[in-house]
Length: 45
Image: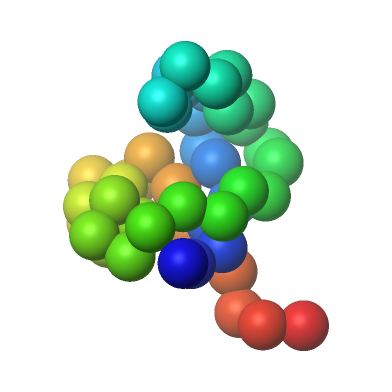
């Protein structure tokens, strides 16, 4: 699992993910979203 900060609002597995908030999604989805600028990678705190 990878934490990402959303740049846009989107639906994911029936949940609404809002822009500006941090969510945890699976690795392949996170990498795809980061590559397409939908989300930004969040470093571990």
